[in-house]
Amino acid sequence: MHLNNRIIVSILILLGAAIAPGCKKWAEDKTNIHQYIAPPPPDSISSTTPLCGSIKGTMLAGKTYTLGCDINVPKGDTLIIQQGVTIYATNSAGIVVHGSLISLGTKAQPNTFTVQGVTKNNTPGIPLSKDSAHIGLWRGIMCDTSCPMLVLKWTHIDFAGASYGNVDGPAVEETAGTSFNILFQNPNGVFVMEDCWMYGGTDDGIRISNGRIHIFRNTFEKCGGSGGDILNCKGGTTGTMGYNFFIGTAYNGQKASNKGQGVGAPQTNIVMYNSTFVNGGVQIVPGARAGGINFEQGARGAFYNNAFINCRVGYRVVNNPVADTANLTYGNNYQWADSLVIANQFFTFGGVCTRPQPTDIPNPSLYLPAGFYYPNPPANSYDGTPVVQYANPMFVNYPLPVPGGLPLFSITSIGSYDFHLQPKSPLIGKGNTTVQPFITVPVDPVYGASEVTPPGADLGCYQINGTGNQH
Image (cartoon, rainbow, N blue to C red; front, top):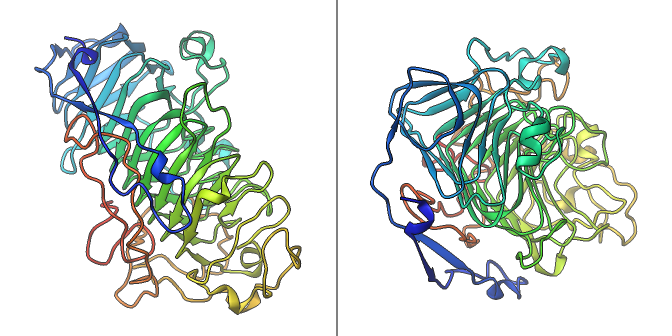
């Protein structure tokens, strides 16, 4: 039975459409949400021989499968992956999804997409060319415009980023050289990613060209290669991101843009809250793009309660082309700088219109001239000396300032570090809990969001009460 035949479409009024004062157009974003009724289990898929070509059905719990070549899920069909499944890609194989793919790992039994025999390298400062994280050993998950649903729960996506090639690229309307770890591009489709891990890549970790999204409690290490964003949302993307952890990103961790909005697609509209960004922007120069959050080119939404640790460039609202600043609110964001090089980039200038907020930590009054924001003068310089190493976040065992002899940005993976907060952290209790998530996906244990975790009282993705990111 095709998944499309099991869709019951109902028009629901979104709760909490207006997220904060100043977002006067949010109430217009009432959308159809699809409710899904679980189908009977599809036929099981054998793990005894390598998989190639068209595939649908269920990968059974605890089994190990091998991709002998590219597989594709036909339009109207579904591939369900039960908990504890390992999928090894060979021959740079990938998964083309015209139908639906649902990976249902659990905390106790996560699923894993990887390449057999390749191990992670946590050595600080290892060059890109010598790090298996950035070689691109398989093509990842490539969703066509027809894909109505991609659901990933408690799932590892490791060592992806191989070029799509002359067959897979055109099959999903991309060039042969495209190399995103995950591609999703259906404006009416649902992309849910919860409690997952992504390691490595050569370009964007996840490119969302259109779609309704729910991206919560995930961990991203060494993503973006030599120049990609991690969660790169283009025109027609709506939804919420929360409690994600990023370390060693190439460019932006989370980006929202309305560029490429398709005919009939909604305006990009994303709420972001309670994420942590460590050593972001490792492949960029100061003043270019960002290491954490970036809103640009007509995108609207909100970002609150985020923590940025030694990110090469602070969060940015871009002025050229301008974000939808009339419908964009933000505040309660924290930044830490080991050095003046970082502190002087907390707020960038030149095509950027980010306005410091009194709820930010450090308080802008400690180091910014009165009235500082682009394009009002003085917009070309400030001295961040007063906020260098100000208000240590007090992670459980990550050293700040970074120990001598270890260059900034050289730590790009978690390893044995623990980024939970100690009880006396200045990030505790500083969050804005009135922010409303923008819910555009169904809430369902299989065919949607398991839950929509509300914004937390503590800044960053780890909450002192044990909620938030579970890694």
